[in-house]
Image 1 (tube, rainbow, N blue to C red):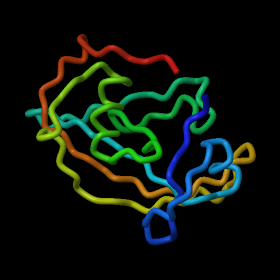
Image 2 (image 1 turned 180 degrees about the horizontal axis):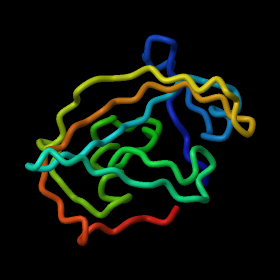
Image 3 (image 1 turned 135 degrees about the horizontal axis):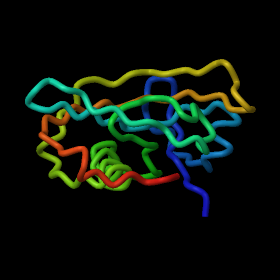
Image 4 (image 1 turned 90 degrees about the vertical axis):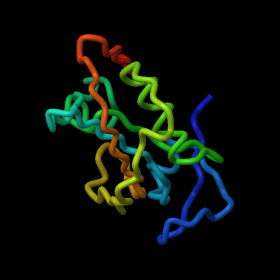
Length: 138
């Protein structure tokens, strides 16, 4: 079953409607994502590389983990879930510090997609051993 996201207005407020991911990206509806950046005690930032099979930005270097906020889900819950799903790191909510929210527009209409989203950006200070990471392959 395809994921559904809350549709937002241009100020980031929920409209009360939801829509399938493919339709939101095709029609350019505002929606929300969570981004997680891990920094260790040596001030090193953990970057990941997107799978070559991703439909947006395949093979690009990006944040430690992140993903869309499902309909009815809290952005912090999404950040915690995505960190575990994408790289196998399970941390309590108390480790996540929301540092800002960005308003992102990709107007290039890549492959029929018009992305307009609010990104809740979280910083996690943790010493993570990269040899212990478990990357998802989707």
